[in-house]
Image (cartoon, rainbow, N blue to C red; front, side, top):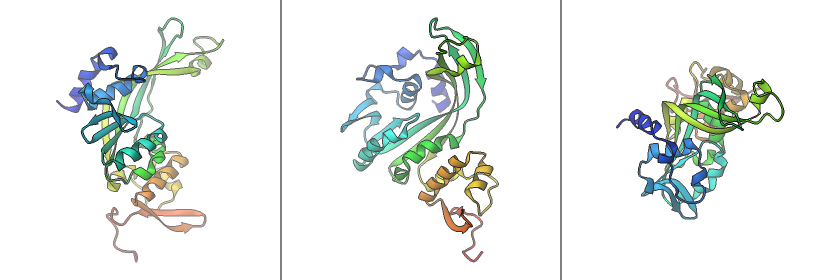
Length: 263
C-alpha cells in the first residue's frame, strides 16, 4: 500500500474507529494527532506506550515516533531521555498547505460560514518549532519528518455580543479540529545536508539575513531563526561582517562552486 492509499483509507474512517481509549488524555486527543498515529502505525498496541516516565505516541521496539503539531519546547525532556536511552526517534510535524475554514455556531453546532484560505504552507512554517529543539537536531538517532497537508479547519464562533455574520465575530473563534483532505510532499531531515531544503533558489553565494529573507519570501525573524539553525548544523557559516551585518555562505562541503578560500 502506498502512502497516498493509506491516507485515503484513513480519511474514509470515522473518528471513533481511529480512536483508542489507551489511558488518561487519549480521549481528548485532536483528530489530526490520532489520524497521524494510525497513518504511521496501524497496530494500536504500539500507540501510547510507556517509556520510562514518559508516554510515546508510537513505540515499536527501539523506534519511537512523536507527533507534534506545535509547542516543540514540550518535547525537549522526552527527546533527551529517548535519545540517551538509545531509541531511534522520529518527530513528525504536519504543516497545513491549504486551509479550508469552517465556522461553527456554538449553540447549534451547525457550519454557518465557509471560507477557503489559500495560504500555501511550506517548510519555513516549521522553523519556529525546529528552533525550540535546535540542540537535538544534530543527534544521529533523531529524524524530523515534515509533512504538508490540505486541511478543513473547524472553528467555533464566540463573538460575545457581535453579529453572527460579522467579520469581528468570525475573528473571535476557537479552533476545534483540523481534518486532512489531501496530502502533499514530505521532507525527511536526518543530517545537516537535508536542511539545505531551507536554502532558497537564487540566493547569492554571500548573503545577509535580509537578502536571505527576500530570496525565501519569509519574515526577517524567521530568516534569522533559519540561519541560526543552519549555522548550528554547519550547513552555513558566518564568515565576515558588512558593517553591523553578518555575511553568510554555504559550508564549503555543500557549495558546488567552492574552489578554496582564495576565491
